[in-house]
Length: 185
Image (cartoon, rainbow, N blue to C red; front, side):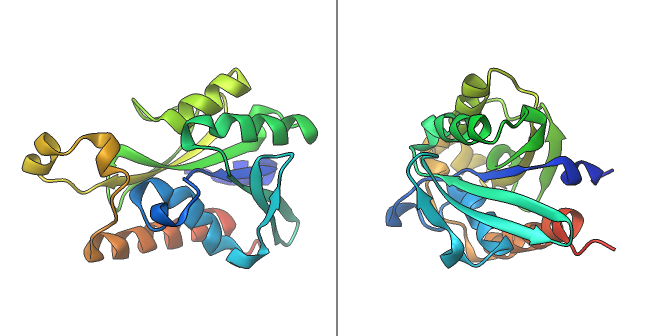
């Protein structure tokens, strides 16, 4: 895949939920990925942006990182506040999020295409007024047939990864970092 689009990205948003009860849950992989790019302590609360923000720099690449502090279902409020302040076009935004339509250990980098149902993504699309932004869809579905029948998706995404799944997620994070955020020549 041609990943040169990263040079045009000005904002990377990791989706997740704020609060200790959500740490390490499947729904928080967007937050977790951003923590692999910069030191977690470098994020600072910006009330105007409704987000914790930091900055990623690598050679000529300078990107604002944001973790919305709204509820997941209102993430678009944060994205629109930041994009208006910096006069960003939607195609300059990359949103990283969990995806229950993709198996744990897999991911997709796509433009204008998302999961069947994801309230955080729906909110971003609503507030931006478009689907025309970049996404990294990180697979979180590790359910077997019995679990798929007995556990509602909304409950499953708030659960924590199994040990083997955690290793797969860490490998996904490493692969994404290498593809998009590795030192440029």
